[in-house]
Amino acid sequence: MNEKITDEQLNKYLEIRTELGEENFKFINACYDEVLHLKKEEATKNIKFEITDFSKFRDFAKK
Image 1 (cartoon, rainbow, N blue to C red):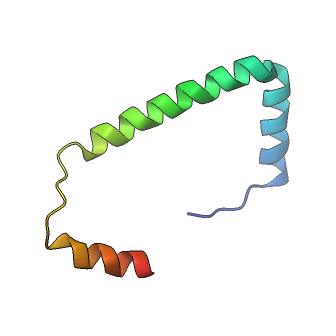
Image 2 (image 1 turned 90 degrees about the vertical axis):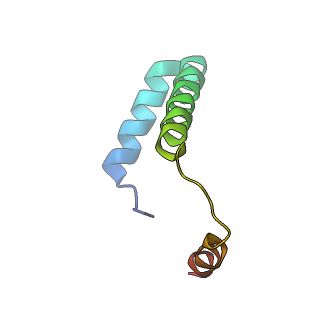
């Protein structure tokens, strides 16, 4: 999941951020964070963490 950002992507990001200005950029980030939070909430709403999952979780965390 740690993909490198290309120079082209970085330049486009900086261009958009400059065009939006600081206030609008903060607003866009807040909107994005809220949408991401809602999507995560929806995706995990019926997932339950059982006691038997702790060892699996611990093994995964060690990787």
